[in-house]
Image (cartoon, rainbow, N blue to C red):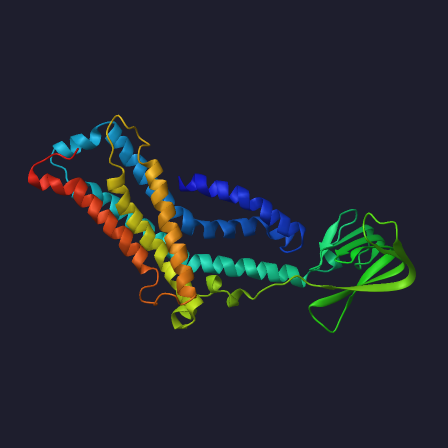
Length: 342
């Protein structure tokens, strides 16, 4: 179940990563690496829901085939059912907890590092003859028929769009020049024309030049260490910032969520043979969506200091744990009175 969901998300992410690579926001040679690092981040979301739905479907089949009723009639109780499931769930929760606490933040930092490297290399060295390439924050489109080994462009076409209209430059040659600002570079043209105007209007300004330069700002790249989701666990523990506290509680919530959902799946899987294997699947999906949305909302409340840190996100886990224990008592507690559960 988890593998299927992961493949779907990776296929969806591939288009976005491919677009970032084409826009020089990521190195082209790091395409597969970025997809792999992204899949690590997805595991913190997919493992709990995959575990939850898998237990629901597995126990649902036992109920459909009346095997669960045979176990209960033979003296089996909630301990025989929950013990192996919770042991497996605990092992899986430890694994996903390690991914959420250590591996996923490291993956985020690595992706940020790759983005920063691509930003530092955002110059004419990435140009290829006969290809349109986007440069800078303004999204200027550059095309060259020929690229020399020293990075000079021959027969260049550039288009920039802004509030005042469109600007098109056609030049025989262009090269890049460094500026005093490390975030700004200059693209210098030789022997060409510049056209300025508003598309759809007849009036265009045409300027012929021998030498002309346009500055362009490099894409923004936030520091990997400045964002809470990429910070190491030791930094989050030592921080009193509300955003860091929320991130810490979110990471710890991933294994807790897996444990609670694994326990909650046992009573929710209860169904009659006539209902079929997927009887509780719809309810299970609704439960997971509610659980995940409450966690997301409580994380925002912690970031905004609308709830005390000791309340934080823990109340969501306590609420669903109490619901799981209550449903287990209703499902199996009546056996002590000598009645077989329906």
